[in-house]
Image (cartoon, rainbow, N blue to C red):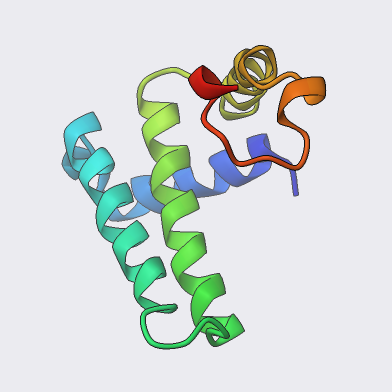
Length: 106
């Protein structure tokens, strides 16, 4: 399923329930953080978290992130590619390969 198809499905789901009224950028950003915490909770006591639970929480994070991008008129795929290009310049392969050092310390 493409990002466009997912967004179309999400938009319909939200419209059917009249939930868009609750989806300000601020509320969506808060929801990303909240759901990210729930995802992290899957790993709180065990590095081998239950896969189905992780999938559910990750789906929640992605859903709110996609809704936030949509609300702000941002193309999710393009912003990821743009950020990757900026990060690529910060972490050139010849300096960063196999290292976890922050870019300003390379």
